[in-house]
Amino acid sequence: MDRLAFNASAAITEMRLARQALANEMANMTTTGFKRSYDVSLKAFRAEGEGFDSNYQPQAVHMDFIKLAPGPLMATGRDLDILMNDQTVLGVQAPNGELAFTRRGDLQVNVNGVLQTGNGHPVLGDNQSPIAVPPGFKVMITQEGGIFIHDPNLPGVQPQTQIGQLLLRDASKTPLTRREDGLFKAHDKPTGADFASGPIRASVTTQALEGSNVSPTEAMVKLIEQSRMFEQQVRMVKASQENDQSGSSMLKLAN
Image (tube, helix red, strand yellow):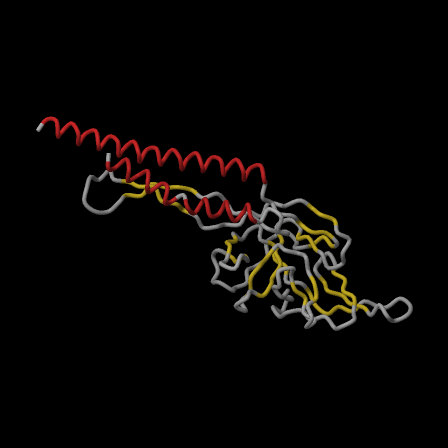
């Protein structure tokens, strides 16, 4: 019975990663460009130490790989809003200064004239440097990621001047994992490293944003399943305790 209780308590402990991932997804259902992770899996590993060779326990295997399934398109009409097409990702500067990637496209120009995402990450150009916008100029972004500006205060039709190119990469052939700061990185590369763009042309849709690809219905169903699984494991621990108590009572009567 000790083995039954041990396996049940181990399953409760290991499922914490799945609960944490699900809680993070539910908290970001309305976050622009948020991408959910692939499901956490449980595998059986042999428990080392004294005992029988058949001692196995479940352990969670979770690498937090990003699921780049598209979210709903939201037309905004705003010039600085972009939606990454297919599996395109945008290069940004992480809080520690490293190169990272995101699908968030609600861009804005901060007080220092630096183009950044809605959550404050500076947007990088193809030279991996932040893109600076001169004060008073209007910004236009092309489908290929070109950054063009013009002065709206001058009379007549003004020529567009390109000041940069968004760092866009196609991640269709590169597995991405989530960093501690919530941004993405290439799984097989060191943190902060760039990766080669895939075969699909990296492009964006302007004046639109991408919603979160987390399904509220699917998330609620998973939450109910995990709650029932937790209750089942707790019942197994209690049943093991009751059986042990019953066995102890029989031994006392025999004496």
